[in-house]
Amino acid sequence: MKQITNFLPNLKKNSVLSILLAILIFTFTGCKSEKTLYLYCWTYYIPDSVVEQFEKEFNVDVKIDNYASNEEMFAKLKAGAKGYDVIFPSQDYASIMIKQGMFHKIDNTQFTNRHYVSELVRSKATYDPDMEYAVPYYMGCSGVIVNKTKVPDYEKSWTIFERKDLANRMVMMDDMREVMGDALKYNGYSVNSLDPEALEKAAHTIAYDWKPNIVKFDAESYAKGFASGDFWVVQGYAESIYEEIPEEKWDTIDFFVPKEGGTMYIDSMCIPKKSSHFDLAMQFINFIHRPQIYAMFCDEFSFPPSTNIKAGEYMTVEPLYTEEILNNCEIMDDLGENLAIYNKIWQEIRYTE
Image (tube, rainbow, N blue to C red; front, side, top):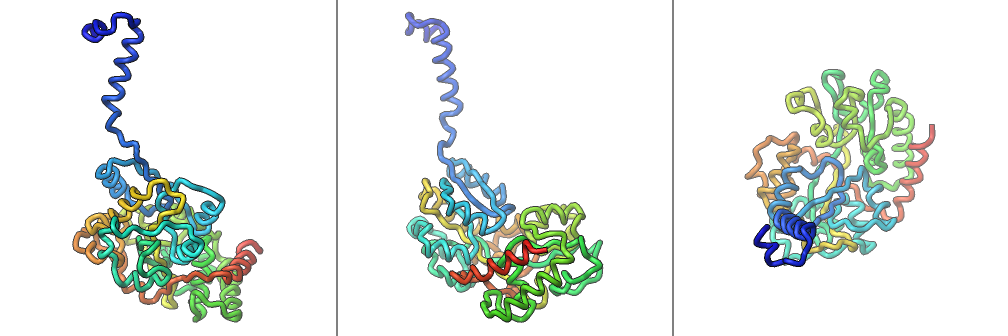
């Protein structure tokens, strides 16, 4: 301090201290990243370990907001929400948003890991097979999760939601396409059917056979309710449930796709037009498809590496289910203007006692 004050003879002591404090602050915080990547993603979907490694490697902060349904995400963005750099829409909404010009094009010069994305998932992603706007993040499916300690005997069928003895112990997702798609599949139709008879049968199944026995339609807290023991049977995603249950209790849980089949999804990474950090978003997308990183993602959720062809070589965890389970599932397509037909039916089911 003496040496500094000799060079600043006319400054008051408190001014010198202020300068010293500023120097100290700069010394300890000057290296802190001023870059921030903003993600808008499904709950339980990006492992902390992956985020932390990206932050460290690219000297960036990552902020994540979560949503529980495609409808919620889409409505928020259409209402004018901005600032997100990467979002994760499912295939039907990715298709809608591509058609509406809501995404930047993927820069292939920065996407050097694109050759690791499997041909299987690209063949299913008919809405954007060349990954011009949407890079597959994960291809999977929903299904039924059962607490085997509470429900030791059951058929692996959608008829489980017809069981009166399980009334008030079951939940289905508050997701129109998932529930209606499964009801269509149960009745022998495509999950994308627009046939009036098929839709009428599906609506009847949901409203009169399933809904009377469930506690509620819930897309946000069903996993916590299952983990707490409030619910014994839920329609949902395996990753949401296993995230809430200690690993030593995993043998008490059964996840399955009913024998009649079910819905299948491809969630993609897309860069909204209103993103302020395009290059950083591209770095994140490319980073995710580095096989070692994608293996970390699969290990966290015990997913099969169906989306990245090399990730399996680096995985250390046995997947909860195999890719074969997807054979009995069907992708939910973009229905275009016909989505209004589903919306009308769903509103009647969802909000009519």
